[in-house]
Length: 285
Image (cartoon, rainbow, N blue to C red):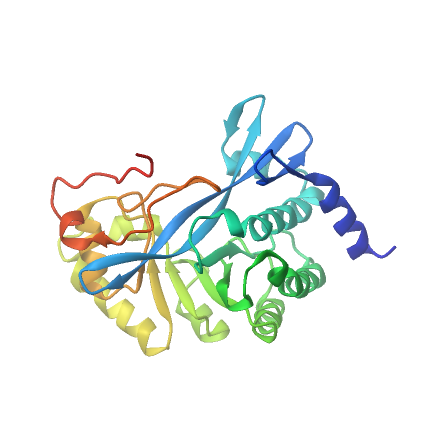
């Protein structure tokens, strides 16, 4: 049995299903469950949910453990397996996200150096299995961000493998660390995600809109869509809209929820969201 077959056997053993068919992962004392947050496109005076971003929650003894706290205390040798488990669970649960025909944004950044071959093999395997779970290859958006441990050459070969298999490519964390316009020129992504923390700091400036618009124009000129995350206040939504953002995400629009939880797929009225008294929209009710 080769290494890839060993990994697949380990994944199969780590995946369980609850009474309604939602799948979750088992790692030691932890139960790993899928969560998602809607992403909206701008259509006239409304925002339409068109995608979800995939997250994970780690549960232990009935308590939720923050994902970063869980992940970064893992032995380095176990991180690639947990990353593979994260991707497998979200693809297998795609049917349960509650957004028919929506895109799935999935982190595909290897966090361990020297994991290039495994990353390529996993891309091929994901692409081969997408149809089994009702997900067309073009609906999967593979996000590569600042924690990616690959060098530029390995990163570029990974992106080419995604393209060969019909997957779409997004750059995550734009605006912080090494993730900059140079990455956009190198990888030629379909989508660039503006880092939420960076965007919030920008919005503190009186002239935020004038500062932000040239950046989005530059990215649009390179043929990419721009996703702005971390939108929590009406003023932040206004900056993103005025600058020409294509896709929007944040607590003002919708909270992350466990996969399988119903959220409204009805478009949101922009004018209502821009009112100063606008509050975070609840997903339940």
